[in-house]
Length: 476
Image 1: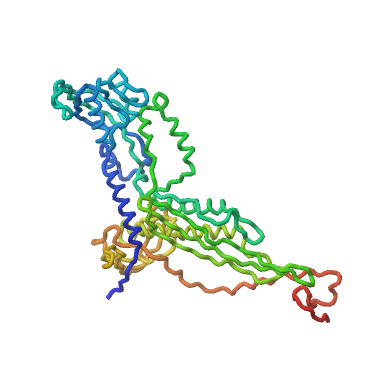
Image 2: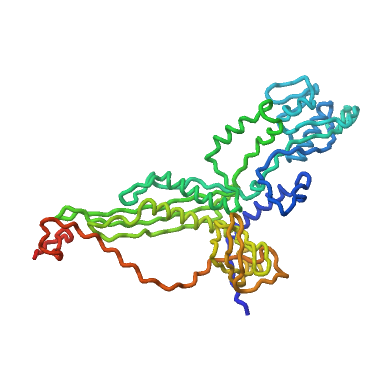
């Protein structure tokens, strides 16, 4: 009988991400002309940064006046392509065009004016047919107009990254503007920058989240301000109004960060007896912006190496060590966030060789990991939510090559059925312990430096120094 284990997951977290993924998938399900499917699968893909494309649609517009019928058709075309109607445009009682802050305009909507009138939403249009005398739904007693239009709508096509769950790392919550690290001081701004940069880098490299950073907003707004009719290409106007909002917030909290020096002055020598101790405690919160629900909260603690009281001792931890600890804690949290939401799965299998869904930021080249086969889902009968799935050990996988967003592995032991395999059926778990190596002799412990000898120290190397003890004693 095979051993089975239960895999517990953050159900609320997974559900929120699943919902976001469904929304993003539905937004980008269709393409303009199917060119993506026609691409050669053996050639390198072009970078996807999004862009503006023109979509042509045929619509019928009706209205009490010719201008109103044209506007009705343009509204329908823009709604079909972009999902929202034109804003800030109307037809007055005389059938003239009203838009912006200019008030009534005596000219109608033409192919020459439509770009500025629609603020870049419509590149152009042509009238295929028109008929006067149609009754309209607004006033069936008044004959109106019906026009058949071919409308070219500017549509901004977002990049693939825009369809991912969008996440932003906020500035950490801290109770102090600086932290004492022994005889040195660490600025809180440096701590905040290190946390945000490290978490953002690891999450971004995973390829599972789109990271948004607001610190560049002023530069972005300045560049977007360059887009205007008559200054830039007309279709560039479609880039306006495309800024993304955030789905999840990561909020770091520094609860403790100190390496305190304690000291007292010896009575006889006046020298200082010093010792150092301290630690780090950080909590990372993940909050759903739409609902305000806290999806995840992880706390990490580190006790820093302490030193015994000594007049010759020095601090064992410096600023460079603290920076390394901060990077390590940020890494631990980032990897847990990613694996809780997107476990490392086997996406392709060929014999004992396999392709894995994460890259070098999550998997170490040359390391071995436990492989499990996913079983049925487990539902909590009290809440009705899925809390995990059954797992069955399936073997050990060694990472032979780690790339940016995927890795290659080799099945060292165990078996995977090639015929029944499907992507996502197998997942990686924790790193396997390395094989024990022959232990080397422990290095000799460094002793405290001896006090410098002076001209009056000719009474022998074993002479005790009074400043090492805070009490009287007889000298030999």
